[in-house]
Length: 434
Image (cartoon, rainbow, N blue to C red; front, side):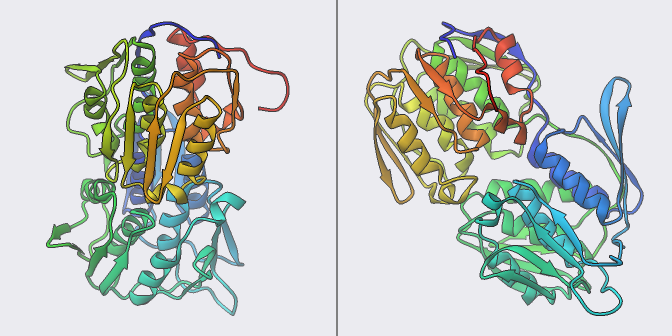
């Protein structure tokens, strides 16, 4: 990539991956036909669509009044009974893998012996833990097995009895979300007590999407209660992806430029919608005009001491920006990031080190003593979309930076490089495999 100077752009962020996959699952289980307006079409959502179709949902895509719409014919909770063992491929999607693990327990038991549904994925996904979720589902009456706490996961069907269960969500808030999403189809109400929950806003987002589809979800005193009441079909407009928007705002912060995301209304349940407030602490100026949110970067960023437990995905963005600041930054509360697409803390330390940054790994974060980053450097994003997009902001400022595996951004933001080009960021594509 070539330094672009202060970037100035108005861009529309893609639709939320988190909302798309949650709404798609609720619609697939609902009674009736739902319309998802402006959903995200990415590798992760395609994996979810394919799996839910295999479980009996009907999903058709097509524009309505010029807006992309997915028409989802729900199963009313009566998932297809596999005629033979069925394998669902979550590809590289953690949300898809964990959510499908819970949904697979709802499949009616098949005739004869043998497993009903196996949830699997690519090698990197199979290294991400699933054990606490499987244990919680068993406690609720599911017949399900894993591989010593990791995928693949196999459910023989028969549904959930319901009742009370305690779940340790230290490794991922997705465990709690998965139980909640399947809970309306248990035979009696589910009371879920969650311990060691690092990113509660994602679980709150799950509950809100469930309520949008008519579920009865109550939260109080550390316990989530879900009534045994099925989802109803709805028309849902999928909001912008705050995580994707964060990568656009980072380009403004890194270059001292100005980026406006035109479809970022206030009031989002997404935890990463809080990133602009942290950018203000680093010296950026943030202003809002209705749904348009603008971040203006300073000439030089300030260091920051930040607990990112509520938005662990943004450790990549903030760490890269901290390398451009003057002084020492400390990022903490994100031990969970070691179990994402890669060990993000170790990968950040390695890749920022290539640019001359002094980075110390902590069990739950990083200390970054910033120096003026310098190239040339070849950045390996470890096939992690968040790392690739985060380092794009730095590459827009620092000469001589090459980002390998650019195609990995298709996991959540297929149009990322095109949007950067529209913003005036210049890059050359190397010959050979992406």
